[in-house]
Image (cartoon, rainbow, N blue to C red):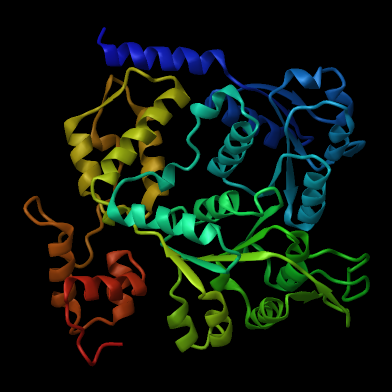
Length: 453
């Protein structure tokens, strides 16, 4: 056994010996079973309860963390906060009760997560809570994997994060889907003077159109049919803290107008009310869309765009991160092996070459999923590229060959098709945004045909 193997074995034994114990409190059997399966696969010991009454059978102090739904038979999950001593508690809630969850944080909850949530989002939340509570697993958990890297673009992102975190200015976070925009927002909040206050993340695309204004700004009782009581909006909920408006390009024009007033006046007016409420909240906005194009197409307010465009952080797509791709893949590979207990697996040379050559239109999210799939499906000790099941994008013609860099391929593709395709179509077929296309043109010195849009 080599020294490296001994180190890895010691690290694994240490990881297992400090395995966290989590209590999941959820009344829906299907969801509770899925949560248990997810957490067990992630290396946690899990116990379950379907109600507050069932939690009485446990000594809550023996758990490292409690994950509980807000609404439970016989009461609220916040009842668990009343004990003199209790482990960190993470509240699961829906958009309709996010305000209650943030209020629970003020009473002692460690964090909350809004349903529906992605598995990685839940794991990130739990990892951050354990890390902030000085749990022994803190040194083993690396939740900011998407921000890993030494390439110049990622170093610039990290430098920019540290600079903007020290201010209270609005930050616009740009990047393709799967690049880690919410992780950037959480990092800014964690490094800011508001880190001990609420961080509220809102996916604007996930809220039904008819509820957007009510959820963001709140409403008075009787403001509309079904408004049976006063509802505190998410902006007011984030008072003193940080509000992330993810996918801000999905907001309706009317909601954009109301948001503009919030940014200008630092106050919020509930739907159905004539009174305004002063608010102190830091706004972060994120989108994968080109807001300048949306402004030109009158789908996004120009005045709001300039209000948001104070400071900007643009995350590079994975394909532009050079040697980071393979290094990140190997880190994700190690995590996936521990997760499913397949520590004997090794990436083959051809698998590594496949990872380096793929364009990764889904970015870090696609890479993580492909690697986890390969680890689960591997039958021998060697992981080959066929297990990744990558669909190589071939827009109109073949992709880059073995003797052609991505920059060469990009240049040739644009020059070949720009006389009969619009900029939007070229960007779509390359799997990038129009903004990325424009910036690549400028960086590579590719002239743009004057007749193209």
